[in-house]
Amino acid sequence: MSLEEELKTTIALHRRQRARELDAGKRIFFPTSTDQVLTLRNVDVCLSSKIILQNVLIRSLSFTLNKQSTLLINGPSGCGKSSLLRLIAGLQYNTSTSPNSCIQFLRRDSTVFLPQQLHLIDGTLRQQLSYLFESKGLGILVEDNVKIRDVLLIVGLEHLLDRYSLDVFEHRWSRILSIGEQQRLMIASALLLLNTKTIGCLVLDEVTSGCDEETERRIYLFLCRMAIPYISISHRHSLIDYHTHQLTIDPSKQSYTFVSLRSIV
Image (spheres, rainbow, N blue to C red):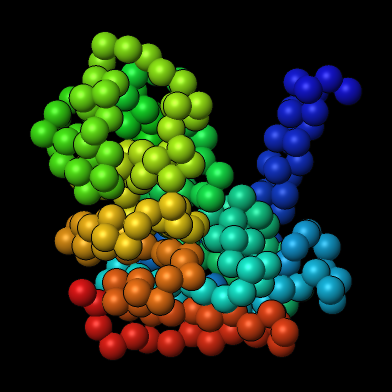
């Protein structure tokens, strides 16, 4: 089977799985007018699509977030944090056997998902910063140079403007930037997109792991000012200050704790 045929087969499989999930009522999309952002009800988080005991990482997960909520997810490596985010984002499917199991979330075009493994495009700095705009169907280049400089300052990449310029040269960013710089460049693109007020939720899968604590603090202070719901995975205890709720996963018992935090900065 050629690579193209394999890709077509994979896409067809995903479409069938998504259709089954929707037909069974295991995934429902909230209208943008609702106050709720995310609800999970009796959802099993698994390593694969087959429900067998050793593949269940979290059993019967249930919680709700509204538009005033932000969630920090933590737990040991391999406990199911990233699997949970993929499940929420629709990159993995709800195969829970409970008859009333359901994931309710905003539609994908109103959410931004930043995974651990980021994919940068080749092009100018402005084109890379506009990547998420194109992926959301906005099809525009970010032309506000002041906002570009502001977000690059927040993520600690303002030196890229002098080093590479915004428009003069095209670059292969995945080769010339470190992993940490790549993470921060994608975060900058997401912060620019938030200014359009078209995004209902931001999901971050350890994408600030390559940031120093001061840069991470500036990023989360910006998110707090934007008053947008976001979901984070991080091992840093300091991020508790920037979230209203915390989900801690206990893989030894396939269980979890979900608590409200005192305040947000």
